[in-house]
Image 1: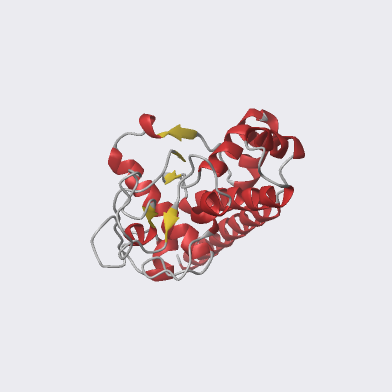
Image 2: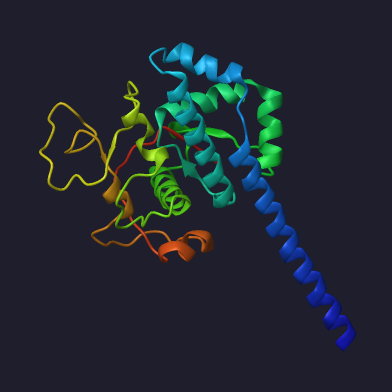
Length: 228
């Protein structure tokens, strides 16, 4: 009996380290991935005011999105950036490259789900809160009391993307913008997603809670789609 128990423990230890090493390799693959130049050129055709330097930022923000989708382990992660979503769309059209990327970086095919196809508004809201938590964790930002925005949440603003999602670090003291329907500061409030004032929400995953705690909250915020 003792021998069987020892073998079982060894098997469990092997499985644990195997999955850990697999996850490490996947994240490393995403971080070092280089998008085919043809994909970047197609994005520039749609946004011809973007420079090559701008596209490097877009590519990095897109990799950040796939990175947090990996960490989410199959849970919905809403898309907080219009320009990243454009690159994602173009990437999907390069079927073989996208399938290979998903296999090596995520271990599964990441489906693109428009907001209107999500099960409910709650799913979309949970998805954007999850995106916020994980993007903050990736950049070592406290999601409840952030001192800056993660690249994924600020890329549309810094590149002045037309129709993009514009997030503000803190909207509390900014005047209401009657010409903008997305919030009192002419954009979406990142601190509302992080719920710095304190509120209850869904439980965080072990990956997320290891960074800052076990609960979160949020309010209406920008996201046009998500990955399942």
